[in-house]
Image (cartoon, rainbow, N blue to C red; front, side, top):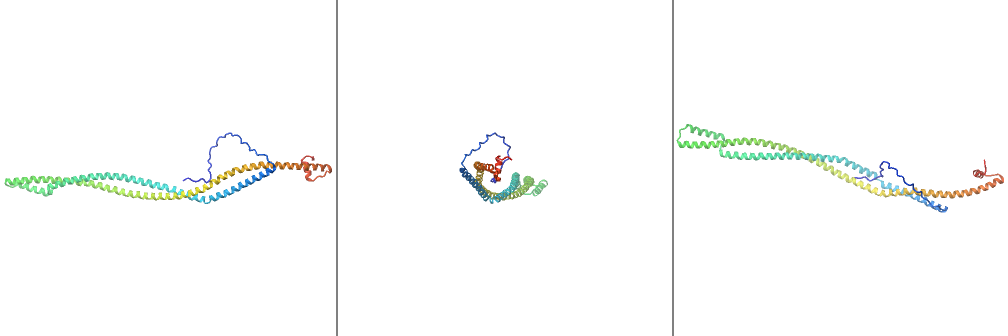
Length: 330
């Protein structure tokens, strides 16, 4: 926000090299008659008095225009100072929010990677469960139950004296039980693998929950900083608008003052010229007066000389006049 110029600033510069210029030709004023001189002198004095009165009026008008200007400037500058105070705080909140959001983005990438691994574990566990369930379906019983039945059939097959047809039936049942035992054993092995994979998957999901909690906490911090930042920027915007209002009022004041100052410069420039011209014509008038005085004194001198020659008696003024004209030697 630019500040209106209260007074012209003078910049200190290095002294410029002197350039020889021709002396300005003195202005020549016409020789006037005594009557013309008196009229001209009166006119010049009137113009000088008029310019001086105008200067007083202009200075009074400037004072009126400037009334309240210092107060407006103080308010504007105070508000601008407040903006300068709040802006770094808002910028710091923005920086902190953005840094927090960057951390959140990194954690989300990690979480997504873990989610991918968790999905792989889930899919693998699903496939293992399917294989286990198919084997359990084939086994149609628990390992302990099947093993007991197998041992009973095997003992019967090995020890009992059975007809051939019965032995063949037992042998077939032994083969069937053996396949079912293999299936349930394999199913148990797969179940153990499932338990291990499930533990690993659970660890991943636990880590994901931890990451999610961190993300939520950081999101809360980010939101808090964001809301504080927005509140500060809103306050800054309001303050700036108020400061701009005072600045506009100042500009209006100085717009009214600028032409008055310009007029002051014109008047101040012309008054010395008028005084110079007045001085020249006063000198001319003085010459007329001196001429008259000289003629008058010449008549008095002749009268005093005649009087001195006649009776030697003189008044003090007559004596002084003859001494000054060296008609009487002391």
